[in-house]
Every structure is written in structure tokens, then in C-alpha cells.
Image 1 (cartoon, rainbow, N blue to C red):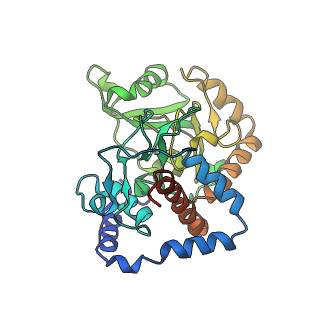
Image 2 (image 1 turned 135 degrees about the vertical axis):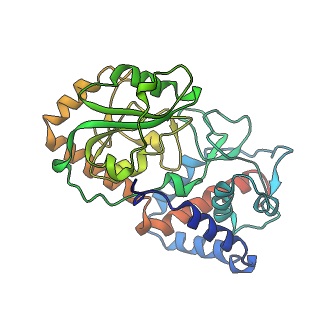
Length: 321
């Protein structure tokens, strides 16, 4: 199986640990540099909007007793990828500052302000402070060599259905497995699900041969959504219920993706419609590419500035700076 577009996890982890081993003096002036770049930026309003989107805390708060210093956080061993990414965001701050964080797939509202990778999309949730975590796996953007018109005019779905929190994916398979409109398969089943669903893993390169790629949430967000939106295929999914640094809550149906009902019952209707309206498909692809561009290399410095101010706001409102 081709791994051309797969995240390079080993090299990412190796580079991250090498950077963490450097003396902290190499990063001590980084905060001042980012603040200067912000003052010089023409995107100040946009940056502050993003900061307030990720960090919705509006009043001072007290840290929980289990909060740890940035120095202690960096010395941990579990969840190494998350720890590398959190260290990258916090390396410009005083290592004695304390922080509360929750690594992994967070699909609940935290009881106190906590740094997380993900959160439910809902009003009034100010405790899940979003940071750009698990970057290697989630922010895997690609360059698609296949034009939309040259792809197979059907959908494709490959996913893990081995956990109870992925019941929605099992429901999709019950409805559309074996249909002529979508090449469906599970790479791992929960006990009791049909063995006939099991199919070999399908690489990103193989999925790019299809015009429509199903992107269904698992424990929290659908990891595939970012690379699908950077491709020349179209993401097909219900309205998202969780979000990450990618701000899935701001995505618009018919603009950035093709929306289907939560029970997936209108998949055939939607694919038939868009197959008959290729100009609308190209419009969605163009909008998706523009959306993705804000997170890619050309805007890397701006992303660093936003992340810095998300954390600075957290440290300020917790009374530490």
C-alpha cells in the first residue's frame, strides 16, 4: 500500500524531541518576536478573532490543583506527540507557569478551563481552550494530482468501526454497504458487526481516485477532513459536532463540503445532484482550498502568533502574567 501521503510520524517525533532537548535560551526571545510581528501585521483583527474563537474565557479563573508547570509538562513521557505540540506552543513562556491540559480525543465540555485538542461545537463552552495539537496526524494537507473530472463518479468510505463511540459509522455501513454509489468498507469492526464489511485499508492515494469522500466523525472530529479539503475531491458528511484548531464549526454546507443528514438517508440524492452539477462541485473545491490555505505553510508565522496569544490570554486570565 502506498504511504505517499501518510503523516511521517517517526521523523516528526524525532525532530520534536531534538528541539525539546535544546537549551531554553534558544527560545527565550520568541515571545517578544511574535508580539512585534503582531504589531506589524495587517491581519491584527483577524488574528484576535481567531484567538477569541479558540480561547473563549472572558473572566479571571483559578487553576485546578492538578495543574502543572510547563517544565513538568515537557518532562512527561505519555502522549509524546501531544506533548511535543504543546511544548512548541508554550516554549516562549516562563517554564514556571502552570497549565491544565487534557490530551487525546475530547468530545465533552471540561468543568474548568483546560487546554485541549478538540471540543463539542456548542454555545457557552469557554472551558475547552483549543490549541493546535496532534499536528502530524490531523494537519496532513496534500497535493492532489488528479483533476475532479478525472475521478470516479461515486463515493468512497474506509474507516475504523472498532469502538462504541463510532456507532454512527456502523449505521452508515448498514445503510450503504454494497450499494452502487459508494465503495464502503470497515478496517476494524466492533463485535457483532458483519464480517463482510471488512475491507483492506485504502491509502489516501487510492481514495483520491473518487470524487466524493465520506468523512464521518469518530471519537471526536474526522481526521480525514483536512486532507480531503486540500484535495480535488469533496468531503461528504453530516454537520460536524466537534471541532479542533481547524475550526470545523465555521465550515458551511454547500460551500466547503456536501452536507448529508445525520442518518445518512439522503446520500444517494446528494451525490446524484452534485454529479449533475459539476460546476457547483468545482466551486466547493475552490472554497475548500481557500479555507485550508489559512493553515498551511504560507501562513505559518501567523498561525504561531495566534497560538502564542491564545496561551498568553490563558496565562493572563489565570493570574500568572
